[in-house]
Image 1 (tube, rainbow, N blue to C red):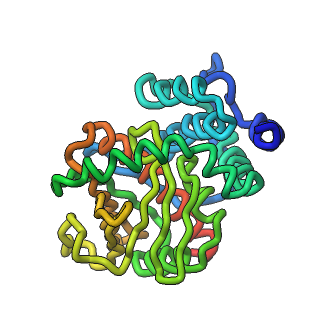
Image 2 (cartoon, rainbow, N blue to C red):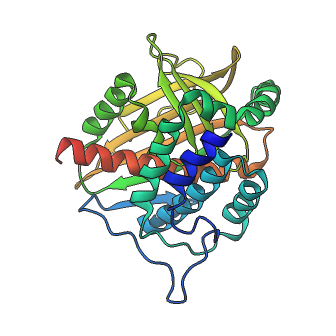
Image 3 (tube, one colour):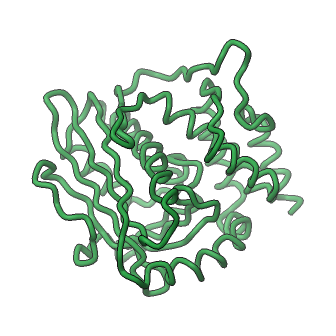
Amino acid sequence: MKRRTMILGAAVTGLSGATSFGAASAAGPRRASVDPVPVLRARIGGRWRPREEVLQWEARRIQVAARKLRGEAVGALLGDLDALVLRRATSTADVVRDRRRLAESKLEMGDDAVMRAVSTDLAVSGAVTPLAAAVGRWSISHIELASDRGSAAGFVRWYREMVLRNRPMDGLVACPDHYRLATSPDGGQEVVEVTGGSMLASRFVVAYDDADHVSVPPDPRYPRRIVGSANAGGTVIGSVSHQARDLRRGFELSLNVAFPRTLPFWFVSEHRWHLACEFSNWVEAYARESGV
């Protein structure tokens, strides 16, 4: 506990707004200042949202994750409620720096320590999620994400290579709610994350070679696809169907995750922001690494 506190104190205490739960300055929230990146828009709930709204969601979740890693259960709970309900305007000026600091803190703590920090979450979700999935009916968390740079084929290729190269930072830096993304030799990707509106981390394995248990039918408008089932303890608890198509300028993703229909509706609706966060950051990484 002392080592975990020291690491998070040194690396995460500097996270912007880490004790103010996202309170904005009198002049309003500051905007992120980053190197030139693709212009991204996310269609969430039928409305196109600018990148700034997704960055604000990410900034709030950074604060929640930092508290969870510190073992501050009450602080993390209050942060969850603030992020899910109040959604107060939050500065995004330092979100690029803060997301990297948080990811680096997880790496410095080490995988065992990070898993201990979410062990209670995993015990509860590990018991509940397979029961919720037993009915075998699904609700789909869906968004669309458009980039003015790159191509559908280029991004899908980059994403598959990212999964296979298995670099921990690639997954951790994409979303504050990621605690482990690790690919096994057989290609299955173990994921430990807080999904959507859940306040608890869960563990599951995405089998990208399993299209038989994917609940979202292919959309012929999106010819490039990344699909797979999500399994926990031998039970299919959901699936992913990420599809891509070229635009006149850039490309568009149709991102879909199937959740057990028995879960509360906000698990599905809130996961749309999780998808927008992680895939926006991955698209930016793809554009940066590919030079598109």
